[in-house]
Length: 194
Image (cartoon, rainbow, N blue to C red; front, side, top):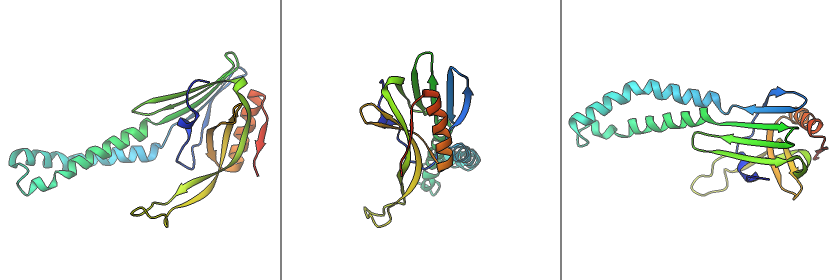
């Protein structure tokens, strides 16, 4: 095993991998990330650029001591929105199962970094469809009153050392369907948690 299984945990409740390539020797699954929110952020940032550019020009002319100088945060926040949108559009995950090399390759790519987890078929004992408790809610001023967790079905790889690797989250039917496909490909059992 090369890589850290903990890097493939996810905060989100749904991932939704799509089968991109399915041959007898190879199975490739991809997830494109939060595309709608990413493109929405990029679109808003570009639209708000028409407001930010005149503010920047006015600040350059009159300085921060003027009334326009009080709007310095608007171009800054627009830049942050642009960065968040670019990050969300760049997030990608893939799962590649290759019979010829007898390896499973998980990749998680973002604008900032790329994480890889390489597993041999012999490192995997079985697949598990279970329920994860996913965080929902925001704590206000350190309070735990607003925090809650809700159950979401997940598909995990169980390794020989007892560690688990999150593959996907979603509906129970979709997780069982994907788990059946992966377990048939790897010839490993699919265990359903109750």
